[in-house]
Image (cartoon, rainbow, N blue to C red; front, side, top):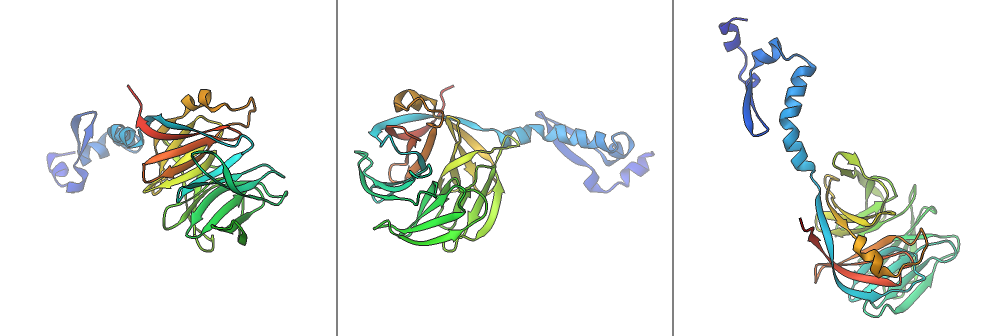
Length: 291
């Protein structure tokens, strides 16, 4: 190829890539003459690797325990939320599921509603003066009056129900997979979905959820961690290690007595955490892990 030929190449073929801190110029002539097909793609890929790694990096956080609080040990916690000084809790298991209103400081159940024995209670969220409780395999979202806990409505949905949270505009629902579903807060219709990715891989077993600004915090079922998810992209950008709570929890020797239940306190910017059948609840802050 002559110099004239190279000079006649379009400008867009002369691109600069920053590779591992150093600039390399890839001319259109080089691409067409020496780096054809996959070779060219490999060069571009390696140039972008540092950028991709930076964008997919997951921050590591720990818990700072602010308070240890009592929790009813019979509660198979599936959903948890804080509103107006009270905690509202959904508990699971067939023939034992319930909806509860709790005093967070004493753990006292001030109001309780037993579900139909054929229903397995799951995620819970508040929208206005209504509480919405998912069921596991029954395909029903049960809607209650906030003050009386009386059932006023039910919505049908397909698949399983696990976690639920409200971001002020839409409900976000998990079903145990790596997908989060965006639903209408009034009629529960499906609006959109996003796949949750951690360092380029789908992250499944997402359980109870808490919506906080542009993020969704999720318990990972049967793991001692919580992840923070960008609700727009689905990318996990932080892992919160909750292992330190296990020794403090007083949990029974039951393989199902796992971490679950997360509620955000916006006034303190703290979280309430507990687990299934745990006799303790914790008020915590999420802090960067010490290096």
